[in-house]
Length: 487
Image 1 (cartoon, rainbow, N blue to C red):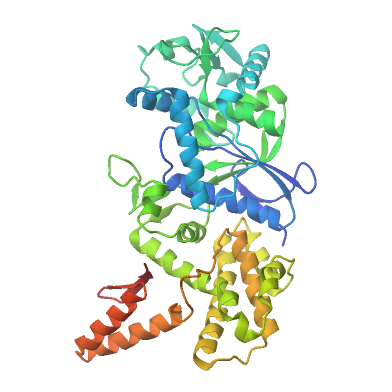
Image 2 (cartoon, one colour; image 1 turned 90 degrees about the vertical axis):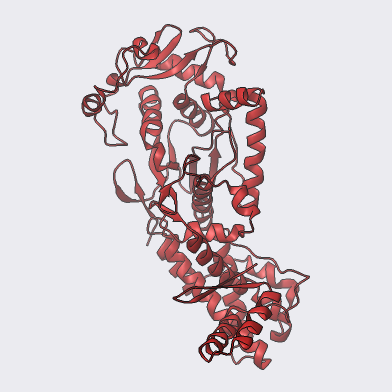
């Protein structure tokens, strides 16, 4: 089947076609740089990284743009708290972003435009909106007149009359900004300068742009009037992406994006992540406590990208164990090439070649259904487990009945498919094959330990636990079962 994806705009799954044959223009609403990136950012960045990788895998030339919002109330607040400046705070967290994403194996975008570097494009767009009757100045600010855009609400499904009825008792008529607006849901395109805050000259006086206009301008400057994919978190559907559509399409008369894609949110132990609940986890906190970055990628890929995911200790342990299964399969060739008679110098080169087989086709068939990465992982796990079984036979019997060239093709297929999801493993020189325990062998030892405990042979039970611990394997006993993870 050809690729079909769920389009938030039309609320249905559609066959994917591009504006320009063979090319994809893709924009991802990036981060506001006032703090370290958290698990929500990790999920979004991993999802769109893999979507991009998959599009390239099936033959598209992808131009991938991700912005930085580097002027915002939150950044200015952080600058005041740190007795710093907007520029210093933004630069600090932009560099931290790149550090965190590198650890997660995120490929860099083709370009990272910043709001402060797009001021000419922002002001031109506001000017065009004002000229066409969609914007009006008021007290140094400039507002977008939502009632003048007939299709306002088409992305989110919200209707202005319903929103107004629902907000009638919550509007603060004493609010200065409210008094400047002609209609309660008009939003700021340009904000008048405030004392002590950065500001830029403009036809409407000194000030700075609103959040929504920044992305509209950056998309237009870097990718043109109409792009193929506009991606972001589900929390951005309204008002951010709704307002982007209103701004851009009012000026160009063309669709801003043909496909709107949104990833689901992240919960922590069933609760929305927030600092007040004490469950706010940054990417670097998670990785610094020893969680493998590849396990984080796998955790994200094991869920359908549009659905919410719940980050729990059990979930990350399951992802960690799953990653070790895949990792062992990825290292199969490095560990057993000599016994199989492979020319190791050609292994990686050959694995990068175009492979066509049933596993590749099954992988594409699964993922082509709205980026069904969990379905694609099924094929990856099948290959990894098959190679791990063969590796276990080689370790214990010194040989295998399966033809070496057949194993080579399976291993190269596994490497190829895993790389589409950004899952990569390198052999560790300091760890000898003798010291590296396979998943199957570990499970065998755990079974022996359970038998010893059943027979009240606690000395043998402790001996097995300690043996595994010396090999970097920690056991976790519960009433239901014994789980394990590699340290």
